[in-house]
Image (cartoon, rainbow over all chains, first blue to last red; front, side, top):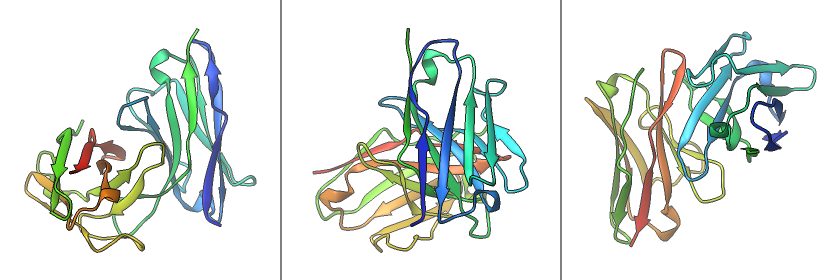
Length: 120
Length: 106
């Protein structure tokens, strides 16, 4: 079955760090654009980061310097390291695959999301 | 950075046609994708590259993109189409989402 499964969310203290994981099955993460997209409670979708098949990464300006995306090809897993947590990082974090159809890719495969809550 | 604008809400009578817009400067030259998100669920791709439907998406869903507006059209709207809809495009290796439109089927 083709799926993405996110784990690692939870209740975190401001200023802390955590690492989210996105385990893929049925696809090979190193062959794909993989992104993290977050959604604050009651709000819209916000793109966070991506990692290209070549390993190049990019980030939204709002998280640059605090977030780091990476992958472990042997585990077929993508990670999102979040440092210096802030209340505004509270959101469901989705892992998504960018599928090439001959142009800038849409996100055709999404995980179920993992909730990160930042509160003291 | 590139910005896109969606109406906060759209209402459509059951069985009629819903139109959801995504506005942006010269958006017609970009590839626009559309997602449907129901409460408590992950987004689902319904239109990619302006006009294309993924496998499994009903033909009632269609898209267009020209000038400063991309449009998602839902024909013969059903109660099950009630959801939030988001447009998405790429701008210089950065993904941009619209703010989302809540579709209500009356």
